[in-house]
Length: 238
Image (spheres, rainbow, N blue to C red):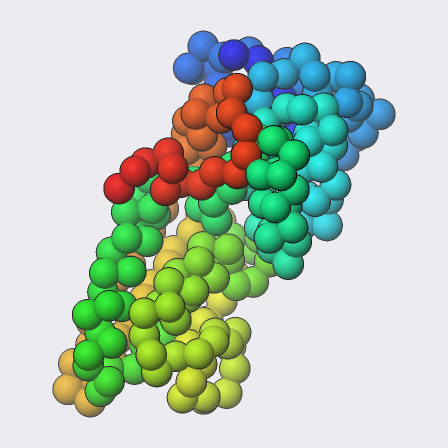
């Protein structure tokens, strides 16, 4: 399979290595230094594009892939105010689009555990819930897309929480998220339920970027030839 990489930072380089290990060809690499090569004509040579860039460029990158009629796997977070419109555009125009806030298999298992625990804890209002996410200092958005996904799943099933709040003041209806940026940490997410007498804590800690890169390539393999919008739920079918 021919794969186009849009974004060639640390994640892009890790994805390239996984592509080669899985016998794919990286037919196009786009970075800040070769934007002139980022054309519809060049994109059309790829079977699938994998987009890991920056929040301010992700939307335009996705739409260029749509224009080239090349399915795109997006791993950029921080642009999700446009997410619903992209999903609608993908489904209505038959353009392939895959998005998840985190491509790690372990994190997607963690998502399911988080959903299950939130349903249980809805019956135990004495437990206050909060979240912490820790990432490397080069991560541009806060909280992480993964933390936002976890928060949305908690809010959906926990009646006492109506929204989330980043590093804010105490608000009984808001799920507090603390975002920490520390050196080279690939990603740590912790959900904590605490009562006056004990606490229950769940943590996922990534050892490296490799798990995220592998998930993105597997998603690209899944998206070859597909039309419409998909997510990890479609790929993993838990």
